[in-house]
Image (cartoon, rainbow, N blue to C red; front, side, top):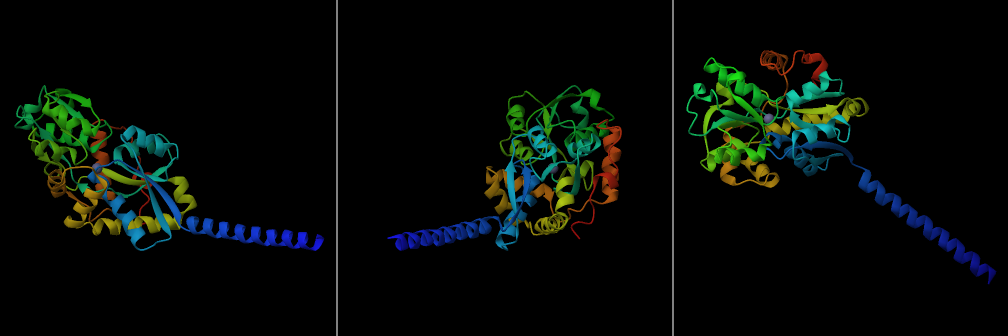
Length: 314
Ligand code: ZN
């Protein structure tokens, strides 16, 4: 009796140990991959983030990306600035402003090049027609604000000659269609959407106003960069490669998979953007800083050395 009790006890112990072992193995399986959390908005400007997630999964890489979707730039910025994510694809001017205010983040690559348009309704056929009109941008700290300033400068106008309003990107096509605003500039595909529903036309593409323009950046927190330098370098290299892999056909496929937008809208939008060279060079950053200062977005943007973690992707 006593012997059988001891046997039962030992059996239970062995079973428990086996179960514990199984549980530990299972846990090891689910945590064997290291995870980097990246925040994004559902726009074509974030396609390389989706593409690199797909690429790392396809190659069964030890590093995996957890995408965290936000509905607006202020929400995304709050998550980034409070460390709830490791990084983000974000308007580069917003990130520069955060850095200027002491938030520990650095830009490691671009989100895209070009890829913006100024769309207007029939009341605006030239830059001079913008005078006295209402124009929407997503945020004061944006290349969309800079492009508006660039367009106004074409006609000798300044930002004081228009009524600027900030709207969330998805609200802009309907605001233009209803006549609430006369034009806007915002992350894609919302410019293409206005054209596709015949609510507006392209007044300027970004490269007509600012060749090689910057807009979104991929940023990582200093805490992630410090604690996971090798993973950060691996991630950035894979990200830049994913950008080069975004051929028109593949970009369309990724956009269809990750953005809930009509294919006609995506077809038009993707004609305006490129992802093949996502490194941030000192020259293009200097041009950006000059515009940021000239148009009053910031008096003292961070220097290249302060803001850009260069060379990670090489
Ligand atoms: Zn952008």
